[in-house]
Length: 390
Image (tube, rainbow, N blue to C red):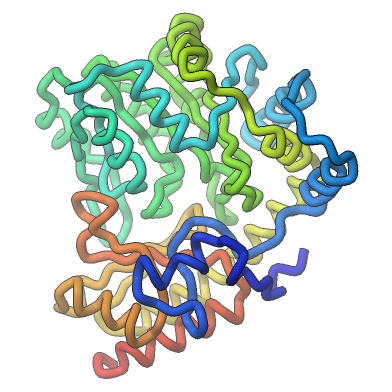
């Protein structure tokens, strides 16, 4: 588990490294890619061995007999999250953006409202709009650099046209691990307004020491008749390119509706993703995740200390994820100025906060899941780029 090892990703069809110049004007020759949410680390050896075994076999046919795959998911959810999952509840989609899109397609109609707690993962709004549904932004409250739910304000926004609530848990980009009380509040909100709740928990394994993620199914078991859970190996083990995700639906009626749409769309799993997931959800994979989070905790501390030493910048303290959320409002600069300093002067490609919806306009998102030397270099560049403020 050598997380300090620099793995060359340029010239490998990496979106994160090979597309950052086209997206942000930052050359890969001397730039640092800190935007796309994948890690610059190799996955566990168990995953690598599974891929090597497929290559050694040499025949890449359709995947069948998924019992071992489903058992691995069940073992992981039980051992790591205390949640008993019936294999019959599990659908495999081509990642969780696809899973989100499938939920929107299966459970809402064009013109329906879909609630997002903004700022939030930008792909949600993209697929909602592309589906002909309406994004309903319910802003989170920024309470001294920590996001909180604002149910009273959200209640006042509801019109009755809303049909679905998409929750990001843990939260991307704010890094919050929602408390059991907050999750119960979300469940009650969905009951009050008759909303289907889609809980995207793709970051649920990436939780820092001292924090505890609670799966929504355990936080509010009374809403199983309106709950869709979404999980994946992809973020946890840095295998996003396999495009594999799980939509887990305890309620039989909702399962029938979702299954019918899956059938109509002709969706079947990617065999590489199935083999990789089975290998990842193992004791060896669990040990790798524990080591990863210890390493990322070190990166988090270095990044936050360096950023918070720059007057006008504030890095929101992460409780989960490897996506640092930096508020630049204190600089007094317009977005194009502070973004220009990061991209042109520091030569770092980052996500622009405005793409995450209302409340994100003064922020930038930095991916710190990269070898520590690169995090230290990024901090040094940023301190130079904003040196006139110090």
